Length: 164
Image (cartoon, rainbow, N blue to C red; front, side, top):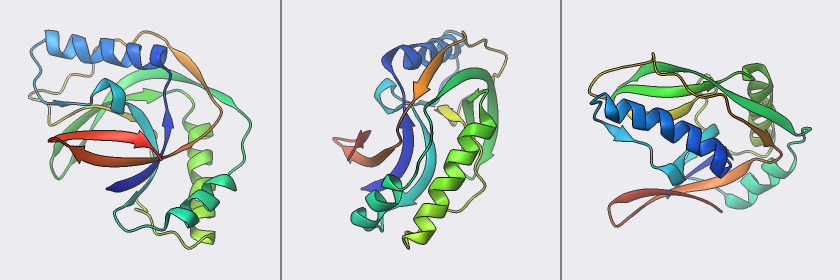
């Protein structure tokens, strides 16, 4: 089981992301599509070694006024395992400040996490057969009022993300 902290999406918000995935499929793009139920925005990845009590304490110390996020354009980046096509959001500064506050609280509570540079994105497809970022995403917004401690586990060969 791997632990991460994320913003979970409403069903409506996810449906707009799935539309973009469907257009990629319609254009013949193959790859590892993020399943509907797993769509999220990671704020911090913790990993397999963790103290859940410390993590929950750190998350409870994060304070922020609810805010809206709005889908933006598609982008891509390379990883050691291939490309990732992702959807961006317009509120980069707001979400980055939230992630920074979360990381500060994790450090204060002695929680180890992956300390790579944070850039808010929503992974849509990993290792695509071709990289397309010219697909339009319909404008969609949602209110963010909380952050979630999540687990990633493989069940019957399928990667499942769920809140803990």
